[in-house]
Image (tube, rainbow, N blue to C red):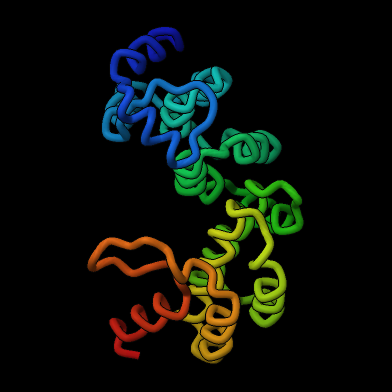
Length: 222
């Protein structure tokens, strides 16, 4: 199976409806508009191969890049390669797949986290805050949570939307997992008001931190 074979298959699976939906959700650049379930089905036909994954990514096609993420071996990518991929992935869904499948699985993710937390590139900053949130939840030792809250309070109102999303989640997770900071987290969330008017389906929890944190803590019996 060649890269051209994959592109032809993806083109056949694409639809105008999905292309329009992707565009509304921030997708720019070439795409066929393939449903995520079909993306996964195509990837399952491909044996994990980092060189083939690199070739798929190099096409610049969003659907091919999604397949690439699923057939990449993260440990075989250099940290510079990972950084380039993250910087290029401006489509939120692709950025999230990179988070789950690539940089959170990479052996150098801690050094990347530190570097990205000081980046002016909004996609790298987005990834840096995502990795920091993982640390907040799973391994907070060594993190200065008070300093993180200082930075969030200072920067969240004005940072680009890409990094604001993961920064806001870091704020919420500090409030959920670290009760000693909860009141301050709620105060910051109320002061900034980020996502206070976010549209949310019935039964879902909105990303507005005061509502989100209180709801999760209540469900946990806190």
